Amino acid sequence: MERCARSGSSTFAGTKLVAHPVRLSPLKNQPLVVRAAGGQEQPPKNSYDSLEERIASGEFTDAGSTKERLTRPLRRVLARDPVGPGRALAWRLAKIGQRWQRNAASRMPTATGDIREIVGQPVFVPLFKLYQIYGPIFKLSFGPKQFVIISDPQMAKRVLLYNATNYSKGILSEILDFVMGQGLIPADGEVWKVRRRVIVPALHKRYLAAMLDMFGDCAQHGADMLEQSHRDGKPVEMENFFSRFGLDIIGKAVFGYEFDSLTHDDPVIQAVYTTLREAEYRSTYPIAYWNLAPMRWLVPRQRRNAAALQVISDTLDELIAKCKRLVEEEDQEFVEEFLSKADPSILHFLIASGDDITSKQLRDDLMTLLIAGHETTAAVLTWTFHLIVDRPDVIARMREECDRVLGGRKPTFEQVRELRYCMRVINESMRMYPQPPVLIRRALADDELGGYRVPAGSDIFISVWNLHRSPALWEEPDVFNPDRFPVESPPPNETTHDFKYLPFGGGRRKCIGDQFALFEAITALAMLVQRFDFQRAPDAPPVEMTTGATIHTTNGLWLDIKPRQMPADSAAPPPPPAAEVPELATGGAASTGLSEERELTLAFANAAAQQQQQQQQPQA
Ligand code: HEM
Image 1 (tube, rainbow, N blue to C red):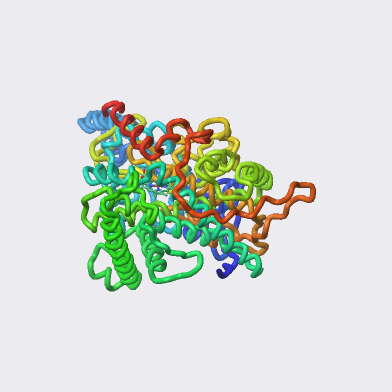
Image 2: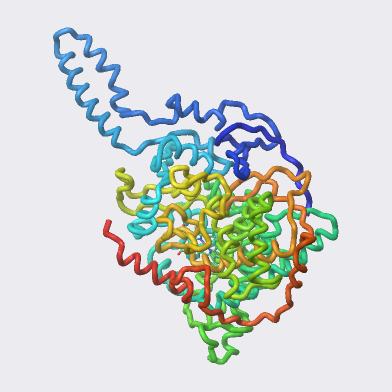
């Protein structure tokens, strides 16, 4: 892994907004700091440095009624008529103008601007500033494009839960169509309902237990790679490391495929990354030129993307065919819950359970799970390490817990739930860096949010970033404090925190991989902090944010990693991780760090609770 060049910076006090190509750097316990790539101070014109002044000047504000403003000069001219009909007309116009003004005042606050101001930088960053100015709901207009930005828990609850059937995935479906087709994330309506009902049961308790075992093996393998980097005297770029770690896990979990991307690169791995980057590119690029057929062939990156999609599609077809053969050979002797020791993957479950779907739908589902379950967890782990690396107090508490519960070994199903403090570290990391930072919806029919009418067709952004960083909702929101979620309380989620905390969304479209992801992240975190000491690489570039579907770093998170030094007066180091034979663990419901409902078949319970919520939801 090559070390990135140090990027220069310009720093401003307080939360500042900056123009492309400036990135925002999240520094622990400090106000957000702005850095300019290339080290140049940004010119004030067209820059978010001056956004505050520009907003104050009214530049972004749709002030009052346009009709009233346009007719005002005419009214003044008419009013000059001392006695005649002009004066009467002016009076009449003034009355009508007052009505227009009253109507305008009851309209949703509106920020207008130039889309170039937002393109190319993390979109949630300017949205936070605008939230502070315009409040929990406002309209953002860029020429003909309009978005309603929501930063209020109760409005989010209405969109995601109470009136969820009124909202589709909107632009997200359009953007992701090329890669996920009718997969669970972009799908709506009947297709979504059917596919969710089929896929959720695949993530049952015994499956999660089997996966946990595999997470431990992958973390072990990853740890060996990190140790090798230490022996080679090289720092490690952790975002890259976790991305590959996540890819290896999701490949096995979803379709039983060994990417082994931690050790090597191959055309399939390259194809996956080309496609992922294209999805992110399309979600931030303002003009959908790729919808024009000739552009798909004229533009090199689009040609590369088409080729990558073909590689993935062929690989998935092979895996589907292989899995079908395996299921046939199993001779109808389905293992309990369709969980095969030879192949415990979701693909195997879907085929073995007799799910009768087209290969195209199956490919869409697999691609969706691959993308949904890969970079999200990788991003969570990256930002968690960014947060803990300068916090020896947090690392010490995690180590105490891991040494006590695991003693250097990989966690079992029971043990992972005892790692309550480690889980709170992940919970808090997901509060500070939600993945994705914005949820997207489109209103299918008129709705009312925060007292404002939201017409059918409105594109809605629920800013999870704003909810999670709002000073109105959290004490010291920019401070990394895992203790804000006490270990003795149930783990935080959208229900315990009444929709102000949405790391996995909420309502009927809540993440189906939440427990999978938490177990994976806790396992990786626990196994790495048990084994290594971490510090920032001395000449590493500053850690800054950029965004696609998840929050990425601009130049990586570079750490020096070395085997953990035990303090002189401490007990002997924990035993080296045992090479346990992977087998299907069954997991029990003993003492847990999870709520009662989660102790049962987790994914089932999740789905059942959501169905219940849907039934109870008030009518719009
Ligand atoms: C830390 C890791 C993860 C995070 C932060 C995360 C976050 C989310 C969020 C916020 C949503 C809701 C999106 C919305 O409402 O628009 C979601 C949906 C989804 N997630 Fe995850 N996710 C993670 C891991 C996973 C994993 C491991 C899987 C699969 C194995 C997965 C599969 C899905 C699917 C299929 C959906 C769509 C559900 C639907 O619309 O019915 N996610 N995820």
